[in-house]
Length: 153
Image (cartoon, rainbow, N blue to C red; front, side, top):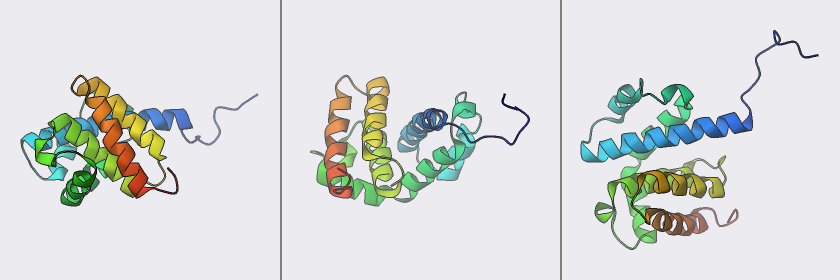
């Protein structure tokens, strides 16, 4: 019989995955807003602090994505230009935000398998992007994964 008064347990892999998915969704929303009205990333953290889904999100992951993408946007956009058929300024803002998150995760979150990065990005694109935007996101991030993580791909 398990004693529930013992030490707290770490969240399961499924719970952590779900919390990160929500964090990515919120980061997408914040980056979309940031593209329309640029502000310091810290303001976005504050703005989204009380978001409806935030209690279900991995707050640290959300913060890390937002800070990382905002700080590295120019470098991420330069990398995106190599894998996309158009410049970042010509991308739909939703797909641009998704691709920024995806390239950031591929480059800076080696603990997240490339397939998870791509799958999460495609899921966001299906939910929030244009009709066939998920196909574009998948193709660009697949090229990015081959370049950034050739040993894993």
